[in-house]
Image: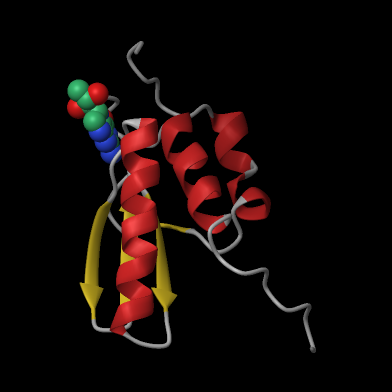
Amino acid sequence: MSKPLKLSLEARATLATDLPAWRMAEGRDAITRRFRFRDFNDAWGFMARVALLAEQQDHHPEWSNVWNRVEILLTTHDAGGLSDRDVALARAIDALLPAEPPPGA
Ligand SMILES: C[C@H](O)[C@H](O)[C@H]1CNC2=NC(N)=NC(=O)C2=N1
């Protein structure tokens, strides 16, 4: 696989609308998202599915789990910051989740 490149300024500008649930991490060139599940079983099931995605994409999260909560941080070590691999993995992670209810529902 070719060496990843840091995400362009143009691509960074679309992050807020493209991946609205993700935030820039503090003090890191990285994006982060917190997830909350019904219980540990659901959180762990989600993590297992993310682990399979990470292996498929050869791109791996920094993450932590406390019972029903999972926090994921995505950055590209080989690029020294955010790359399109983080965006691709974040999109795939979001696609694992049930659709958000519409506002006001
Ligand atoms: C050799 C292997 O392809 C690389 O080390 C991959 C593995 N997973 C990775 N994951 C992340 N988050 N960043 C990387 O730079 C990275 N590099």
